Length: 271
Image: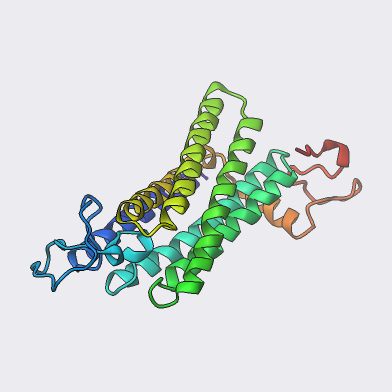
């Protein structure tokens, strides 16, 4: 089923394009300042900027954090749509990746942890997308506090799994690419958090840039799964469903068809 290759690419393309459209709409509607504007003031008089053009006077309330870009309508509607569809695609990708590793006899605690963190990331994205920061700040921050660390942990676990199961030179190069993306995501998330807690125009602006780097980096990482998803088949789905429901193991005398899962403890690779 080579059609599964499209799924990770669709998530990356749809989400990255969507959030940049949200940003452009927020700038044009004077809800945030352009990311290239480093000039901020303590206060601004009535903004005389014409409709359809960026703001000329920016305060801390206008810093182009991703959440801030999706706070007010009409861009908030698109922001919620991206959050919901993106979360759904993330959950599917995590489940397929889990099943694919099971099919290759990689039943491990790391694989299970990756599935859990991936689905947790998806749940956090739903909360972030549907509870705008200016109207439901607590829920929005809870969602972000769940989604961002869970997303980072998911890609780190996938780096480990990618390197552990690499066979060919191309497999190792993909593992190295994922390690690079994970490192960039970790650095940008840490610096985003450090800059965000300071009430400084410069640091808040840097926090916004780091947040954008982190989110785009994570989405690009999800897109790399198209490399493995070309090998997904119906047996991959069966393996994941049977294992998750506890019916994956067959007795030695069973006449039913195996799903590539060996039930003997000594044959399960525990990482």
